[in-house]
Amino acid sequence: MTITAVLDAVAGVCLLGGALLSLAAGVGLLRFPDLLSRMHAATKPQVLGLLLILAGTAIRLGTAVDITTLVLVGAFQLVTAPVAAHMVGRTAYRAGLFRRDLLLTDELAPDRRSP
Image (cartoon, helix red, strand yellow):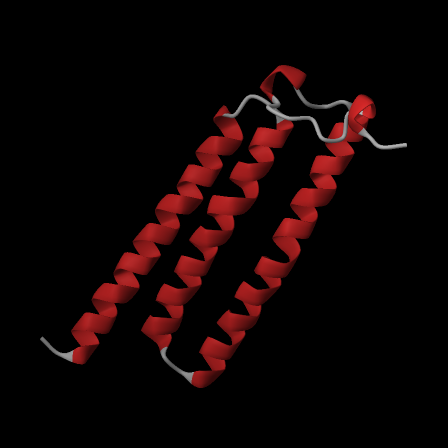
């Protein structure tokens, strides 16, 4: 088995794993009951799935320019997805677009805030 075949197999595993995680994120967006739960499905498995797809693509392409571009795409996604999820979560909480019965702890409730 040559090194090219091994790299192709690793790239295939990364691409398949990334695709499955992205599929799981899509299913979670459709199946989860409220906005706060859907927010997790939209960020966590989706970002990891994208990073796996980028890693598989970088392994398969192998040129410095392509890998640099893919690293920048991954870094941008890692920086923006948590911030966007945080802002969506805060906005949903303030607008009351969540289900209180699904929260284990409500740290933003008025009775829990310090004076």
